[in-house]
Length: 502
Image 1 (cartoon, rainbow, N blue to C red):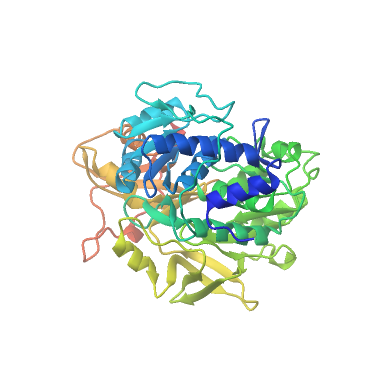
Image 2: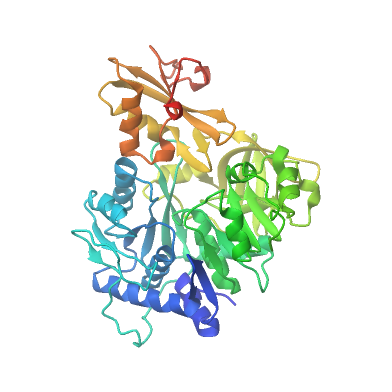
């Protein structure tokens, strides 16, 4: 069965199997039909407030069913969702709102609503965690949980959109500057869900789970996958290493996707007699430490398989579930159906569907990223004798901290705004727990306490972007072209400031 859009998928699944559970969150199960009705009511309300096809609407919500309801309602309208990280503040929040041209925002709690109001955008408060009524009020916002539509009314008349129409501006950190908006279509998500379902080998009786923030890619493709395959998605409020496996057992989860340092946090938990008492048949993960791979499988008695992709391209590579020979090899797998890869000058290039249309408001960055239909990932790679791909580092000036991508230039820009800072250079340094940590080398015009710089950044950027280490330098090493020679910066010294120790 093929679908034209996300709205078409939801409407047809509700007609065919509306009683099936779609979301399970904090003890409440929501069926496909209930999600269809809620999205109809929200879409009608937003249309009344002037939201039209092609309009961008920011969505800033904690995990729950409110986020996917907002997304699918906007999809029915033909509007474009701009997901906003719930941790964003000031500079990063203002950049996403202004760059996207969003005319309206939906907030999931008072804190998010107040942060959005500061950007000058119109804000609606949406709370679908309970019966659908907003539980808190913020001055200057409208109640997006209210509706003038009779629940028994005819279904919402969806906009005429197809697979090539835009539905997301998904902001992701690039190699320089603030995050760029990846233009993702309805067809992108439908194709990604098909591929993810094939990689996971989904079948009747499966239960999926997500613990990542819904502003990220993973809960969104999990939502579409579950709609397509008729299985439920268990949504956790957040990732918690102490309670994760308890939730997996409680909900009889059969597969899930993790990334970054999540496996490390899980391994640090005390062993439990119930570690192998669960229904999990597969764990998909990105960035499995080869040295821990066998340990992970031995402890929980389930296969862990690598999957590789990006916001720009969805899923590109995966290791088959039956390939036990990959354990500990560091392989990120083979191309999934419909994807091609090649290595040019050591860099991994990808083409095939799905793929973003390009970066919003950034034609030059798009042209640099996609050349002759090949997307340049910025990741260095090599291929083994079995044809499996292995990663060997990144060309990007990026820091990957606990699964978060942080553009060094974004942090440098904020530091440079401090009146005492002449220049700043931000680099990654290895960290046993988080993979990489953020270190800032700062040149100042006067003495300034490092705590003041940390607080300055924390007020303007999400907490995960705040430097842990700060080192003051008299000069920054420069290249002949007057760029900072970051490779000449020392990455670890005893006299550096460690914010985590304070």
